Image 1 (cartoon, rainbow, N blue to C red):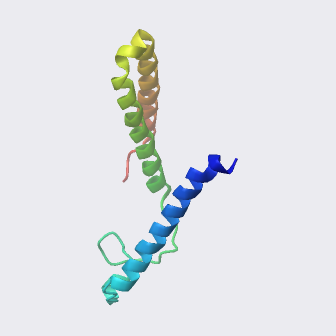
Image 2 (cartoon, one colour):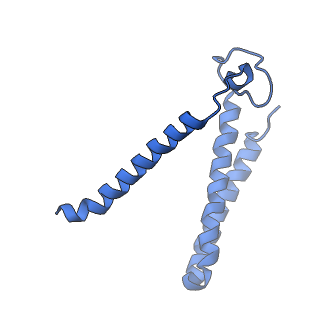
Length: 118
């Protein structure tokens, strides 16, 4: 039974050894120059202007979620386009329904003003 798990054990062992080895090499051969600019938190290319603990506006998260939804739509379109010959008219109809649902959702959020930033 151990022979069934041996490739997995070898893979995990090699990955762990390589990970530790890369960390050690970076620590040993890295310059390690610690300047104030390097140690400061990155704030989108400009200095911070308020406390980091203030709550974000809900619209920020809404735009992020909408981006993820429509990005996933594109991720579903590529395999569909590649397999269009094999899936035939049934796949075409299913994808048209999928796109119609997404377009209706997009029109709804546009009408509700979810895409307005003000």
